Length: 122
Image 1 (cartoon, rainbow, N blue to C red):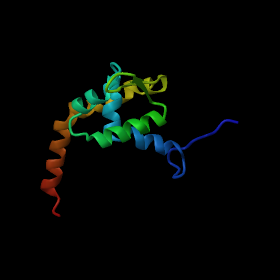
Image 2 (image 1 turned 30 degrees about the horizontal axis):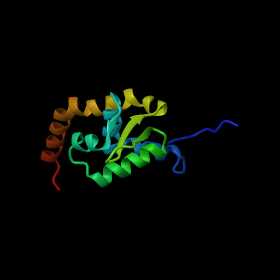
Image 3 (image 1 turned 120 degrees about the horizontal axis):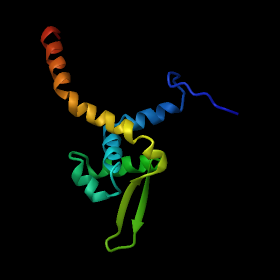
Image 4 (image 1 turned 45 degrees about the vertical axis):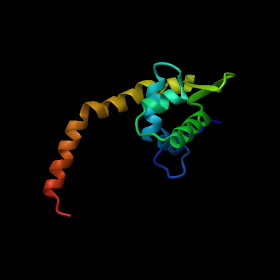
């Protein structure tokens, strides 16, 4: 039986996926993993502002959703590496487009915010 999902319905399970990939940390992690598998500490260093706790929580959620995989290497100390799964790879173009759209358009967004703030009296 084919299920029909509607993201506009409040109980649709697709909203959980939208919530996950709309999270800034998840988006940045997925975009960083687009190129290569990365170790936990390198992710933490490269994604400025993310705490160890939030990185760990976000990685677990993405792994649970089947978007990334976690590989543990028996070294001392233990090395953990993350990579995109085939399902996660289906998001790479979309994630990159969103992340880099923000970089390319932030000046216009900030100009719009300033213009709005100047004409709106709080």
